[in-house]
Length: 422
Image (tube, rainbow, N blue to C red; front, top):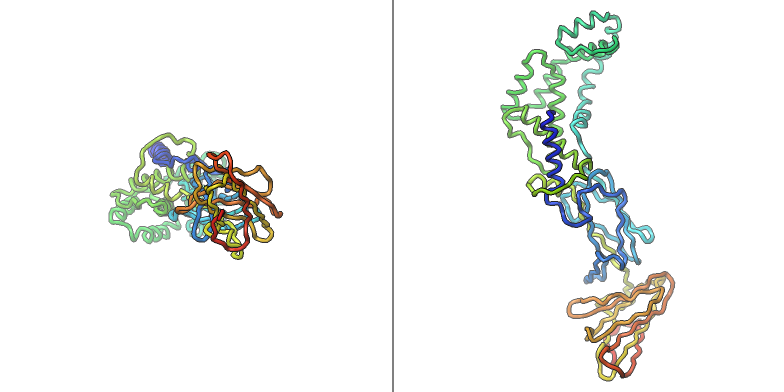
């Protein structure tokens, strides 16, 4: 590849890396850590509490580009019991989601790339096997004969074929002789392989390859190797949504553009150019490449709820009227026992607003969470933070009142729809 095309490849890689990159810090063009850690605990401000008809879910989105890694392990800190779920939001990402599981207080999964980096050298290496299969028997036979040839005989043969004469000792010249002789004896085999390879290609493709084969000192083995590698590279690029470049009218232009593109994509997928991002505009192929590499995860913990305990669901919580005549303070008490699947209690707060202050003691073993809006209701959740049974309490205080009765409410294990106070 020419220096110009290589420079073009690096420039294209820079454009691909920078064009329209998502703004979130978790989705910049950088090589991800081998283990991506996510916290679903209450201290993570990115965490969302989702109230669904099935119950409560703790959710968080995570985005990163699958570059420079064959696999990334997702490790999620789970603050409580429940069903761990991880989904790929971007179904066009060239990755697989494997081994989603829960181990203790961790949710784990593996993100595995389906398209490893491919360089021009890799493409040549991966298309070498058919060549070796054809030439191996010939090379072995010719190699035995070459042992008896003099340096002058080796030199004269290579010179007559127009081969580049290797410097150094006689062994290098003998190796060059064996390769040249194998190329001579397998030329027709490679011409047949070339014809098979280019059969579905456009007319201009056939014309250019035929011209190359008719040139003096044409080497069908080398031509076949380049054709196979370029075709592999073009098919590889199409996996990222790139269109084939076979609409070109000259093979040399087609091959150079494929190699330049491949080098640019390799710089991105391998992560080698990931730190050079600056700023550029989005274009079609850059957008398709980003889409193919962007891992967009929806991470959720579906909180455990005991079907025998209605209070464990937000829509069945006990109801409290926060503002009632003659009442200044409402004190609520209850009990949680995670070992018996009693992980959380829900309370529905009627008339909860700015005139009501929620006060919860700084106690261990449970957590009184921030009230949430659910439809036209305000709901509050108390959740156990340890495995042992725990007694909990919190208060609802009318800030505008300086006196009034204190009402004490106990959590009931029965399904109720009463309003407290009566």
